[in-house]
Length: 455
Image 1 (cartoon, rainbow, N blue to C red):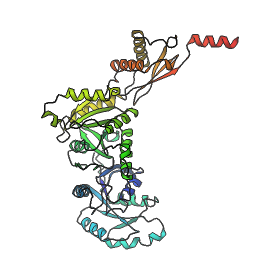
Image 2 (cartoon, rainbow, N blue to C red):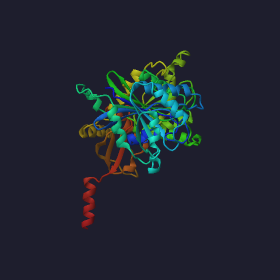
Image 3 (cartoon, rainbow, N blue to C red):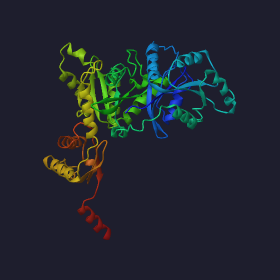
Image 4 (cartoon, rainbow, N blue to C red):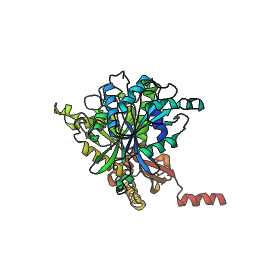
């Protein structure tokens, strides 16, 4: 179901992103002293006093973007205002009323929805004395301090009073209580991540531009497909570690890595017209270390179709570059038109369910025993490695514990053999699996140790 939107607007550097993070209780939006950091609409489903609202952070009104994206930023702000049920007009008590505040206020007076003037940075009684000055705008004033965490309950109460009345006959559908699958869209700069997400959302939900580094925050975008709700996370383009110099780039990279860690499935995007770079390799290895279900997505495939390049060539290229992730499925899409996007999301759902599969202990032990019999491990210092027992200890991703006599005796090659058998025979074919070898003495070894103790 759709929830009322509460849009946070104002001129640059009045603390909109700080207010957004404070209200939701998490550092989602990047906060920086540099004007114009926020470009896209950032949203979060906020629940308070039994109500759910879509809180929307926006870019600063009146900012002149150095990358010539002002028109895109303005469009995102207007979309937020057009869909808002309540508007939070944020001002800075320390700077007082400015001509740009007046300009923003004139724009908001044309709206037909309620506006609350949020006077931010009221850190002490000294600033409190200047709050009444903002009665000039003619809206209800709510003094707060996002930095000092003052006034949250008063602000949320004011929002609650301005929200449209709830339809008591409209019950939430069961899917609204479920946690939608979260899909992180990652890759280096300009591989078409934002364009692909806009195709999924069927609107200009995030700014898509050829300017490198357009996306700065990790942006959650809710979309529906076949009656199911998903969250696609648009992430900033990765750069080489040594290239991340400014604080803003550092925060962007940190947000992107966090999105990988928090995702259910990761879509690793490649540009089919570009060779795989060092940045791609670093990112894929990071996904591998996090043990995330992943799909390699070759984007802009329409460019290759003109040259009649077979998909097998790019597939072989990926397998050669990332040999340790041979199990990862590969998809070919055109983000601009959304071609093959439905098949891609359906495949992501398959990985989502694979990662949550559990196998019975008896079935797992039969499989491991058959694998050992078919291809026994080589002797280790003239001793025979043995696996006594196997059990799945965890899921997401699956973790299988193998109790054995000599954990160090099973080489990396033999572990790959066991993983291959498990993937072939169980429903873990395309996701990372963790094998844990734990030492456990056999009955004979215990009896022998006991006899030595008695002696």
